[in-house]
Image 1 (spheres, rainbow, N blue to C red):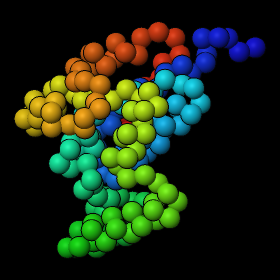
Image 2 (cartoon, rainbow, N blue to C red; image 1 turned 180 degrees about the vertical axis):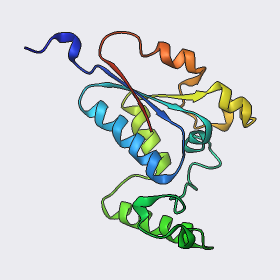
Image 3 (spheres, rainbow, N blue to C red; image 1 turned 180 degrees about the horizontal axis):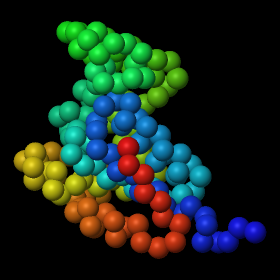
Image 4 (tube, helix red, strand yellow; image 1 turned 90 degrees about the horizontal axis):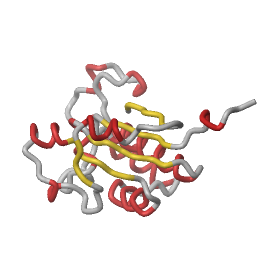
Length: 160
């Protein structure tokens, strides 16, 4: 028999890298949680902040170097233009299945109730201010503040 406390009630997702594949993985996980009636929160730290940085969020790339899932040798992945080519190919495939662009996906997540948090430490390191971020962000937290949001039964934390 399943106990009530075993239910997933909240997903807290930490995004530390703003490669196109990581950002979409985190966004899809958060969106999927909301579709299942589960609370979801995204914490953008270190390079993950680029996913909510107004100047950078529409210019994210696919990682071609050091990414074994690309099935290309590292040497080839580092050639000029390879990252751009891989990114445009990925975006083309995403368009075919009506995957929203990053800004639109952020709008969808925010409208569905996903909480979006910037990391205070990373923002200080990269000299960012809250006004540099996506307009509908819920705020800026320390990691301790984010951990506190996970208190209680049924909260799960995921690092992407």
